[in-house]
Length: 282
Ligand SMILES: Nc1ncnc2c1ncn2[C@@H]1O[C@H](COP(=O)(O)OP(=O)(O)O)[C@@H](O)[C@H]1O
Ligand SMILES: [Mg+2]
Image 1: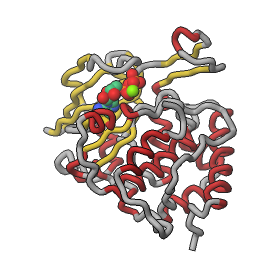
Image 2: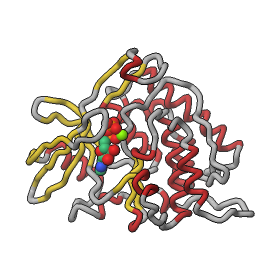
Image 3: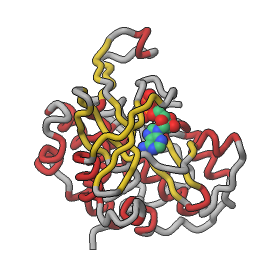
Image 4: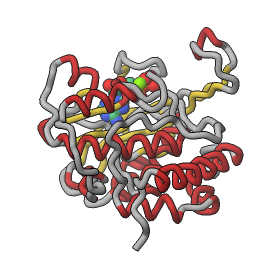
């Protein structure tokens, strides 16, 4: 599936009745409050979780036998706490279409983009990407992202016909997913890169190592019933600038890529304003 994820939206839409009135703006509930903080027994905030991922001792590392970038799953322990994480070391720039499978100049697939996507997510206050840091393990450098226990991917949820749970919340989050994918220009969103825990109304966005194209355009928003983004995200989207982006993304992205993120941010503000999907800052 390509950009715009129309099939995901169509899937979600099929599950809800048609509305006559325009939907209200998403509530802050859609921006998953630091879910990670409620979990993992007492790690009280995301900074703490970032530090855990950066400094905890390695207990085990295993192939997960899944994924074309051959990520591995590690188990970490510190101060009696244990957690798992996914370690990705891919760092490729290629024009080999045998690898890329598409006619794309300047194809790249990099672990650094996983961390950059997490930072853009948090800069906007979206909160759907699991905590991700850069970490060296056994002499290899890569991205380390908290492993979501008990999750399944959207494809599996569809195949097994699992109940959606709170459909409104799902639609709100799919809108936030559009915002994030537009900002990071992700060419690889598909059903396998959305994790869900339907019984808890949890949704997580993973696998952003093929993002940050320098395209200065937006993926199309094909949603028939798009939901205005939450006011807090709208504010961040309007107020973010190149300086703030650079302070978080320098070293992970090339300057040209960072400028492209900011260019798409401005396009996104204009487009969402035009469609009345971006609440004004009060
Ligand atoms: N943070 C995570 N929590 C739980 N499972 C994950 C997480 N990240 C990835 N996975 C699982 O590992 C698989 C491969 O990871 P992914 O990042 O998609 O690699 P690839 O780039 O090779 O597709 C995913 O499809 C998913 O099943
Ligand atoms: Mg994947």
